[in-house]
Amino acid sequence: MDAQLKPDLTPLGPRSALEPDSQLRALNRLASALEARVPGSAGHARRVAFYASGVARRMGFSRERVARLHRAAALHDIGKVGTPAAIVNKPGPLSDEEFAVVRRHAAIGAWMVAGLGDDELVAVVRHHHERLDGNGYPDGLAGGEIPLGARIVAVADTFDAVASTRPYRAAKRCREALELLDGEAGAQLDPGVVSAFRDYFAGLPAAAAADRRGREIGQVAFNG
Image 1 (cartoon, helix red, strand yellow):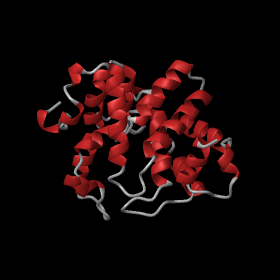
Image 2 (tube, helix red, strand yellow):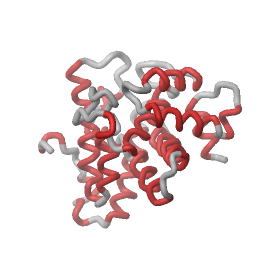
Image 3 (cartoon, one colour):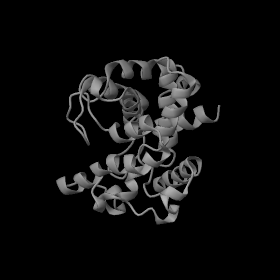
Image 4 (tube, helix red, strand yellow):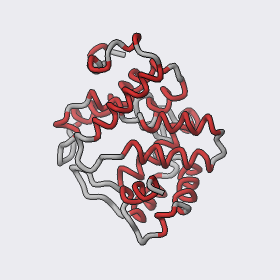
């Protein structure tokens, strides 16, 4: 990675001096701290990890792979440590230059988690913004070239982002967010994963509530 894209990890100490478990704890703390910068995004990574691991179980992943995907999903946006707060919190549309800066977070995040020694985790973090039609980033992968774990996180991430309030737009209702997933199936998102997400989501205890916000559903589900 270009040296100018590498974030300042001084607060974490030298990466080579940390054991993988210590690195993981430090990265999770940093991911939580990053969410505090953006109104409405608190708990986003935790919810994405919750949804992604639930879908993975529904799709027949082993317990070990589910746990690995949960770790990856919890860290999927860690690379935004390199994105200026002025861009993250911008209330209006991003310029092409600003969006180019945002797009760097996937590659930065992959670099940051590489020290954990888990190639599948790195691949999920790097490729969760690829699109099925090949128009995503950072590598323009298409279809089956995109790791399945990354395709699962992409669906969970899209749903939670749309169902949460952000500086540039209001939250959509869960029904609308699910309809958006359907609309993107086959272009941005994997249709099989979208179907598995819908089936999994319908079985959540909180999903019985009338059209709750995604943030609220995530909180209810986590609290049992």
